[in-house]
Image (cartoon, rainbow, N blue to C red):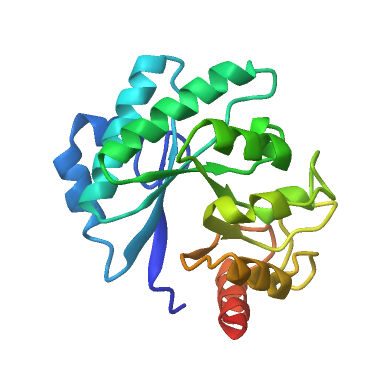
Amino acid sequence: MQFSTIELMIHDQDGHLKPAEVLADLEDAVQRCRRTHRLSICAISFDTQTDDEKLAVEQFSACCKLAKAMKVVTVTVRSSELGTPFNAEIERLGELVKLAWTEGVRVGLLTEGGRMSQDPDTVRVMCENAKGLGVTLDPSHFIHGPAAGTSFEPLLQSVYHVRLRDSSKEHLQVRVGQGEVEYGRLVNQLERVKYNRALCVDMLPIEGVEQMPELRKLRLLLESLL
């Protein structure tokens, strides 16, 4: 499909590696990541399901060490669930940013419906209060879900990484060309703020649809706009 880079998912569920594996044997994780068949790693996504806050921080720290070893700049994290005290979330994110900084890595907060990062204004305030925190922009969540119709314009200056698929008001993911993502407009918006990092194609399988042609179609579409 002629992709040259991938985003490495270090997730407890459906990841390439699990956070516990990276923490248990960092050197083995580095060696496994170097066997990516000529694909370089453009970003890392971290998501742990543990309720142990100390363990979660240790896993994240190991993930940042892996990022440094692989010369990866951005690690994406998820925000906490809705209802989490705002100050507690700022404190948590601030700690992650400081840990990442010691390894020369920066943290991108994923924009995501159903979590604290679903509202662009809230994310903007988080970035202002947790100095160094940036954004992993997923425009689909501003088309489908509780934040549908909300503008992500206030976040563009803080974007560290971008994930893309086609989406509609009814479905988070649809076939390429059947959704409402304005790729040309998005690319122009990112160019205006001098964004020069990856545009990641993040597409899950759709029942009854061949995934490979859909991935290739979106890659070609994005290349035509650059």
